[in-house]
Length: 394
Ligand code: AMP
Image (cartoon, rainbow, N blue to C red; front, side, top):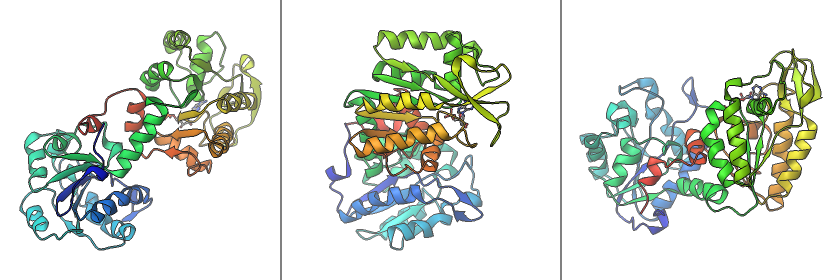
């Protein structure tokens, strides 16, 4: 359990908010303001309490040096636009300039600090640096769930130095994740796709203990099929992981978790947009072809299983969704999840590629919750403790 903004007495207090404003940025322009827009309610909630709000974030990977192209000063106008008011930018995140700017603040004012990662001590979770960040601060708020898997000075070290709380976005992320894997309404299903089993071993190991049904799609399903003696032609397949795949299936059996593998597949000779393709039974994949998507029978099967569930959590596309027509199954399942959500299914999606796939499928706003985090979402799904979250716990 952690404090939330509601619990704070913040009137007249200096509240340092760690945000993730590492927005996509090209040719001097923010290309997607989602992260800013999702963070702004936290600032407004603190202002409504009469706090003096100090925003801090990292931006890019400057590796501990000042890099003009990675100055947060470049996104001030976008933050102002989303917030609907002027803010003050300070071109440092520690030291006298920050102290002076904070001293000049009135209740409800907002200042934004320069990129935290211009100091190498940030990523080293240096205690002295954390103390400098905390120097003029009364309360620490972490709203950067997407950075919570890193123990950095601004995400972990500093949290321990001041009374702290989760921001609204952090709170929403944690509540959504808890409703999927912590305390879900059952039956609960997980859909896991993506390229390789080897990158999602911990994830699969944790999920079989927690969910009732585990749908496996994407390139990683090939390895599971192969482990069952199915020939997968020239498909992406980690043959050396066959034993591991069998172990996961054993674990699932012991935990009464049903594993759902594809029964048919869309195959092609090359990994290319609009490559000539055919749909075959998984037991009849031609030796010179590769599986690039799960087939329509598999989709039907998956959707029927999801219809039996009350909760679903999704990470990873079930096919090579970037190249048409191998996006079909991912999109069809996405639409089914959206429809079921309208009828009461709790649906949570997250992880880099998954968000992009679900957005492309046009269901981004139709799921119960779409996480804004990549790595942190995955580590949470793997059952790992996130340092930034642990530091907030009461
Ligand atoms: P991940 O980052 O592990 O979630 O993997 C996502 C990637 O898996 C996407 O780029 C997909 O194109 C890829 N992928 C999904 N299914 C397949 C498949 N059957 N063969 C090759 N790549 C796939």
